[in-house]
Image 1 (cartoon, rainbow, N blue to C red):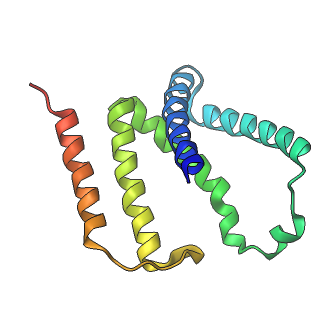
Image 2 (cartoon, rainbow, N blue to C red):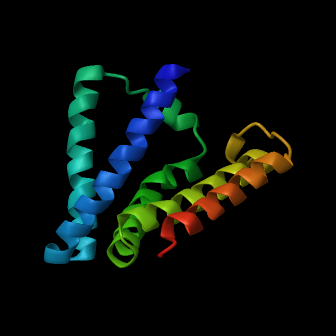
Length: 144
């Protein structure tokens, strides 16, 4: 579990840095060009890692719900929207808003059992947790 927590923390840090990097590139190169280059470079890295790890399971891909392959399309949308949010809100506020949306959406997915996720049922304390995050954003943004 500790490894998973550390991995999640690294993921969050990488996303924040990536958002700033992509925003800086888009200021000079254009938004969709930046999104294209970012995803092309990610593709090259993934192919390189795949070559060394050899973890491809083509038969498994044949059995997966084809709608789930839209994750790549969502990735382009994520890159685009993070660049826009970071450029207009600044990195910290943009990430706070993104986290609220992620927490709310993820909780809905769990409660409703969407996309093959195990249904967990509604728990008020989790909703209170999201509310506390919103209060935290207000405090964080508070100007003297």
